[in-house]
Length: 209
Image (cartoon, rainbow, N blue to C red):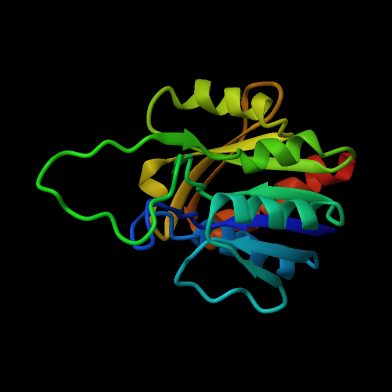
């Protein structure tokens, strides 16, 4: 298979210096890329800014903003068999980016934010006969929100994990499919969890395409 994987955070600049982002390390996405390559698959890795070395043998496409990630993924997805969306994209951007550097005035300022494009949901609308696996990092109403994302992003399965996974070498995940039930649970080092997820994809999603 040829698999598209998104990883890491994205950045949305407020001005030429400051930006909105999150603490995603990209470790899970990079671990999945490595596991997929070791399992004999081709990998196109679209990565936000991280301090990680791409796995040997994968195609790497560095991006910074959410829009850049979407445009790169849209180009690549047509030639892939499926996508694993682990990237923690920035959900909001400033409506009008300020030129230069916003100066301090000693008073409160108001920034008008608008939603960014939902990368995985957009790919889901274009999936055709390809498969889509999403990741849902939730802190409240975890299962409800994961199932909602499963359908809104047109995923074949979604991986639920918690905020504790950010920056950690370990992870605990639940795989939820269209039965709305947990069909697999994996815990341990992210490399081990990645191996299990790639094996699950091969058996339960890719085999049925």
